[in-house]
Length: 162
View 1: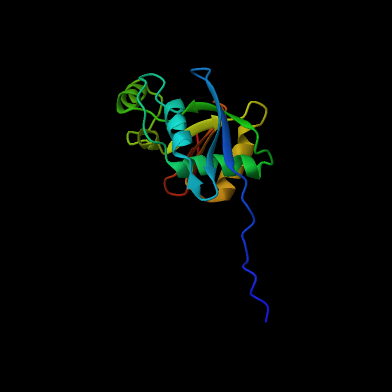
View 2: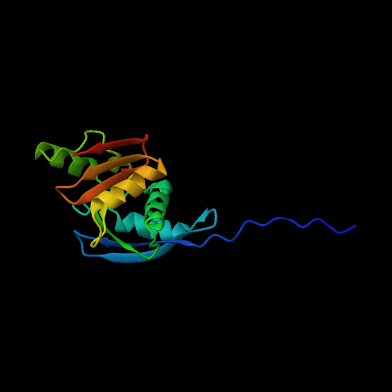
C-alpha cells in the first residue's frame, strides 16, 4: 500500500510594503511577513517609519494593519505599488493639537494606538483604494476625496465619507 501524500499549502509570497512618507520624504521597502511569521526587525523598521513625524514618538503598529495595506494593493493588482503615507501613529500631544486646530480628528483616534493609517497612491483615485479596502470587510475605511486620501484601521468594520 502506498504511503499517503501529505497535502501542502502552496507557498505564499513574502509580504512586502513600499511606502513613501509625504511629510518626511522618507521611503522604505521591506518584507514584513513570510508565511504566518512577522519579521521582528521589519516591524521595528516600520514602527519607526510610521512614527508621529511631529514629535518623533513611536508606537508598535498593529501587524493586521500592515496586512490590510498589503491585501488592498494585492486586490488592486499591484503588489509592488508604493503607498504615500499622510498619517500613521499619532501621539496624544499631536492628536490634541490637531483637534484644537479643528482638523476633525477623533478624540480617541485609532491613530493613537498604531491601528490606523491615511494613505493614497500617486496615480490612482482614492475611490479605488476605498472600494478595495471596503471589499476586504476588515476594519474601518474613511474616504476623504477632497483631501485625496483614504483612512484604514483595524477597528470595527465601518465606512464613512468626509
